[in-house]
Structure formats: C-alpha cells, structure tokens
Image (cartoon, rainbow over all chains, first blue to last red; front, top):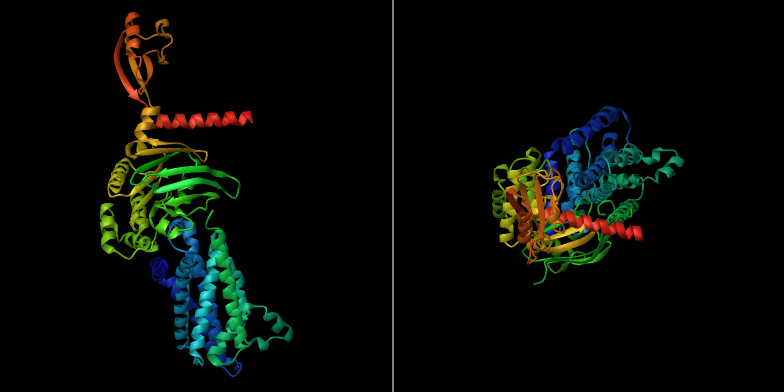
Amino acid sequence: MNWYGIRAIYRFEMARTWRTLMQSIASPVLSTSLYFIVFGAAIGSRMGEIDGISYGAFIIPGLIMLSLLSESISNASFGIFFPKFSGTIYEVLSAPVSAFEIVAGYVGAAATKSVILGGLILLTARFFVDYEILHPVWMLGFLVLTAVTFSMFGFIIGIWADDFQKLQIIPLMVITPLTFLGGAFYSINMLPEFWQKVTLFNPVVYLISGFRWAFYGVADVNVAVSLGMTVLFMLLCLCGVWWIFRTGYRIKT
Amino acid sequence: MEPIISARGVSKTYQGGFTALRDVDLEIRRGEIFALLGPNGAGKTTLISIICGIVNPSSGTVLADGHDIIRDYRAARSRIGLVPQELATDSFESVWATVTFSRGLFGRAPDPAYIEKLLRQLSLWDKKDSRIMALSGGMKRRVMIAKALSHEPKILFLDEPTAGVDVELRRDMWQMVHSLRESGVTIILTTHYIEEAEEMADRVGVINHGRVVLVDDKRTLMQKMGEKELSLQLARPMDKLPKSLAGLPVKLSEDGQRLIYHFDIKSGDTGITDFLRRLNDANIDFRDLHTRESSLEDIFVGLVRAERDERLKEESQS
C-alpha cells in the first residue's frame, strides 16, 4: 500500500480547501444560515410542528443533507476534473499508486471537507433554532456514509465531465431538485398518497429520512431501509469507480 | 549488462483506429543518455507514455529495471521520472508544495533536505514559496524537472525538454542532464533539436511512423552514415562542370562559385588526391577550401526520407 501517495493526494486536496476557504466553507455555511433565518426563524415560527418537532428544527437534517450532497459532489468532481483539465493528471497516472489509493486520496479529502462543513452547519443552526440529537453515533455514521458515497459519485462525475458545464449539470439539475423534493423541507406524509409513492423513487428521501431519524427518532421510511439504500448507492458508486479504472474510461487512452 | 528499459513488440492502436506504434523493440542501456528522434506524430510521446503507464499498450511488453510495467507497475513506476512535453503545472501551488507532493505521490517518505538540495541545484530555491503561476516558462520547466526528480528515480524521461526555452536555459539544462547522468540516472530524451541530441546523447534512436528505424551509438552512426564534403571556392566562376571531373562525386554550386566534392569518411580511399590532381591538370585555381561533416540532422533527415520513400514504394506496389 502506498500510504505516502494517499497522504500526498489527501493533503494536496485539503490544501486547496484552506486556500479557498471562502468558497469551500464560508459560502455554503452562509447560504445554509440564510435558510435557517428565513425558513427556521422567520417563517418557521408561524408554522405548526411536524411529527411533534418545531419546523425550524425539522429542516436541520434536510438542510445539512442539501449542503453535504452538493459539496461532496462538487469537491470530489472538481478535485479529479481539474488535473484532467490542466494536464497534471499525467503525474497521478504515472505514479506507483493503485486505483484504490487514488480514490482514497481524492474521495477521502472531499468527504472530510463535507463532514467538516456538516459539523459547521450544525453548529451554526444552534444560533437560530433549538434541536436535539437522539442518536449521535448514528447521526455521525449517516453523515460520514453519505459524504463518502456522494464524494465517490462526484469522483465519477469528474471523470465523466469533459467541460465545466458537465461538471455542474448533475449537482444543479439532478441533485438539488431531488433534495428539495426529497423531504428536506417537509415530511413526505404531508403529500397526497399518489405523490408519496412517487417520492419513494427519489433516493435522497432515504438519506434525509435516516438522518432525521438520528436527530429526532422520527422518519418517513424505516431507518433500516434508509441505511440499506445508502449502502446500495455506495456499492453502485464503487462499481462505477472500479469500472473506470479497469477500462481507463476518460483517463487513459 | 541487463538493459534498464526493454520494450518488446510494443504496438499501440488508438480507439479511432490510428496506429501510433508498430511492433517496437527497444533497449535502453543503464546509465546512458538516449535520444529518441522523430518527426511530429512519429510515436515518440506514445512510446514514452506507455513506458510511464499513462497509455495502455495494445500489445507487447515493457520492463523497467527488470519490472514489468503492468504486472509489477509499482516497482516499475517508482524507478521512473517523467518531464512531459506540455507545461502542466498546479498553477496555484507553491514550488515547494508541488515538489513535495510529487515525492509523496511516488511513495517516498518526506525528505525536506533532499528537496532543498534539488531546488538549489535547479536554481529554484529562491522561488520555493512562489506560486507556480508567477514563474516564467523556463522556471516552470525547471519545476517540472524537480517534480520528476523528487522521488530520486533511476530513469528520467525528458519529452522535448527544451521546447520554447531560451538558449541560456537550454545550455543550463544540457549541463544538468550531464550531471544527472554522472549521478547514475539513465536519461531518455525526445527532441526536435538535433543539435541537442548531438550534444548530449550517447546513443540515438530514430522513430518514424510508429517504427523504430534505427538505433545506434551516436559516434558510430555519424561515422557509418556520415558523409564529408570538401568545398572549394573557385578563383574564377564556371558555367558547367569540366569534363575532366566527370565520374567524380563532385557538383558545381548553383552560382558557379564553388565545387563541392563528397566523400565517405569510413572509406580508406577518399579520392581527394585524384580530385585535386585533376583540378591541377585542368588549371582550375581555387582561393579557399574547407571541409564539413554531415550533422546528425542530415543523417536524420536522410533516414526519414529513405523510410518514407520505401513506404511509398511498398504502398504503390500493393
């Protein structure tokens, strides 16, 4: 195992985060804070409780997930896309590092950033609304699992994308709508029965539901199903990454 | 002695159907400076990219220091450093950070003392905290070399190392390549500048249309294929070549001012004596004379032309 190689990639990617602190950390924390102010403190104070939880507290897991998914994808996709774009990928490809080690470095760094961001958003939320965490270990588990899974998904997007527009298409056109429609701001039980069934095809529902369960002990779907779906998506991403390195898709000719 | 690089039957056909390499056999000796010459699109970069692991070969095997580049890629790659043709750098990183990154990537433990020594050798120490984007093209080229040497490789590939580099820096680089060789590093360079190969290389390989046309010791090659010419500046210009010189390998220059006599340096009898005697007999006076040996460039151009003519002949026959 090339530990130094993994560490080099990981530290290189983390250094980029510290270099772009405003964009990587401050900006998502600020935009999520605005959600808390508008939906939590202002509008939320005039709304009733959902499943016995104040609206401001109810949206915390969904908002964290919203940032976590988009940041994991954008960090990991940019991390691998930029060396391809600038040509520096030659160095990674010619180094004695395995596919697993490359992924561990890039995905590990992207997931670390997302987890830090999730933690910061959670701390920020404390300034606006009261909340509790019933199952902190599970909460952390869901946070890390989701960050790793979507960082891996972002890595695949970064390999697939051959221009900056493609890099943005999936996060903006797919992930954000799925998160908004995945119960970030409401319980899916509030939807008409037909749409409740349709919503179950949205994978983000399971992530938010499981994460919310870790906070308040209430969920739209069974927590075991949420966990199972998250693990399933992670396995799908793993297969995608394995296929990319086996075939050299868009990284090797 | 076992070669440090051994390529056997290496071919590469890209997805679009373009064949960049055709059954290439090549051996690089330990500790030598090997120049790989060839026109644009000849397959030089593809061959280097295959050896370094950036491009997958369609067929064939390559051993680097005895290690198969695919089955035993870790051992093989850890021995190789690559300076690519393009100036691909992490623009926002500092020189120190990017060179340290390269060392780690190649599985070597941090060694700030070695990195410092390397940066000093390459005259980059003063710039160690500068962002790469703030450096000149020549400095960036040095950074690329520092990155390639950061893990102390035994084999160094320099793909067009002095392309777009000013004369002074080119001379510096030649000097650096010589000192690297003295420290035991095997150097393989591709270049368009024949004078570069002539100046530095121990052996020369010529590649054209994906085939290695020739590999030989530079001096032997120049002796074997080199031609000399004796040029005489005539006292009085001529309209045509005198009959007395018929049958000799001599030409009159277009302006009629010079007689150019070609001879083979490896031949025992160059025929110069006979040529000069005939001139004397014909009362042809000359004001000056000088000889010129064909350069590696002349040999290279000749080889590429010969290969092209042969290929065209084969194509027309088929």
